[in-house]
Length: 151
Image 1: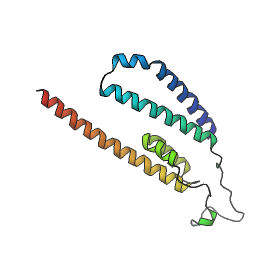
Image 2 (image 1 turned 60 degrees about the vertical axis):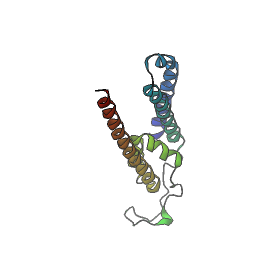
Image 3 (image 1 turned 180 degrees about the vertical axis):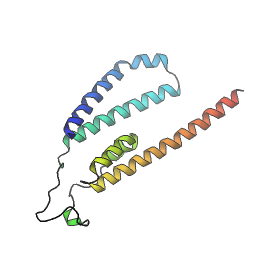
Image 4 (image 1 turned 120 degrees about the horizontal axis):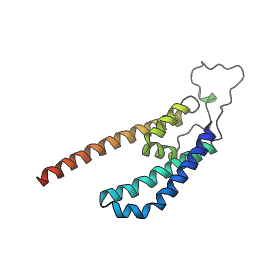
């Protein structure tokens, strides 16, 4: 299922990137100033991060965790039985920060198999939401001050 989702993400992100590159000259005609800067900065990051997430899902080789014979799933956490591939991923954390929904999905799907990786992706997603919220508040304050200065 992860590989199918990864392949679909790769295909849709690639098509979106091509479409956005083809329409790039039209954006220069209609947008100006901050809107142009934001659109030229945001859309490549979103598209490339979705593309990287698709590649990550397709190349994920640790989809199963070996379970020792005689062990039960209700045991307390034991570092000797943990997944050796359960390390925080910098690329996944960056994607989770830029697109918090991806971090939430990674956290929910990986929290049982790779708790350390899932926790770091979840924390990155929370940081992304927090930073986005602060930036929205700052932009609203700046917009209100610009509108008031015009009067």
